[in-house]
Image 1: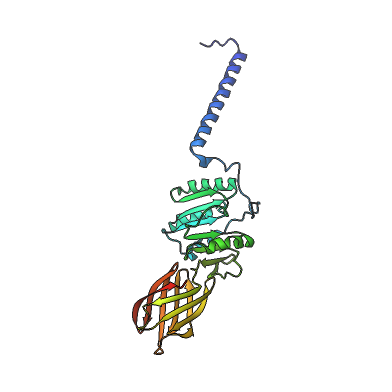
Image 2: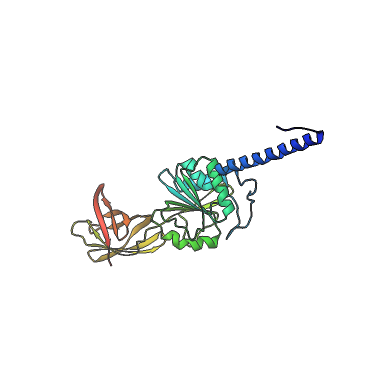
Length: 295
């Protein structure tokens, strides 16, 4: 039992209770924060436009351009989107929230990566969005179906060999900066912002032997390639001619040629490494054709 013998003692005891109560509240608040990390951090880190990063400064992508970029890449729930240089997680979150995709953001700055993770948690998207604190030149994103970028030109060029080695058909979208002589398949943008869209092309340069063409025709194909731009010749029973309108889009190759009877035949093939398969169309009739690379 406490005995209060003076007003001074009472005041001291009251002060002690206040101090103890404040300490208990602090411990409780800290425990709550540990259980819910999304309530921590914003008060000690807020990004500012133009702040320095590892290789770039931070400038968030405009919301409207985010939408246009993801629409240009035709993002669907079947896609795995990697945002290289994720910042606050905006693009990775939008890909999941607005397009239903699974997405991963890679961010080098640990404070930005933590902020992006909190934003993912606030958006209730932890089941479809993952933030990696890492280096885009070291992390593996080879299984992506869509890659988004907002980097400087020299970083785009540094990444270009890696991007060109990705699975043919992978879609790539960049805010503001192109990839020099790798011409964009499409220039996109809004009233105030520009973006660039590419589809990773299959590697088709070289000699191919085609099967299933016109009866008794020996057809050989020689292709040259510069990124998605292709050209070449087709040899029909030893008679060579230039390809008509050769087009490569991802792993889809098409071209036309003139057969021995002077008829134009359209060939459409899907590339899979050293093999191609598809169809030849003439006068409303389609037949299955294939091709093998000549080593």
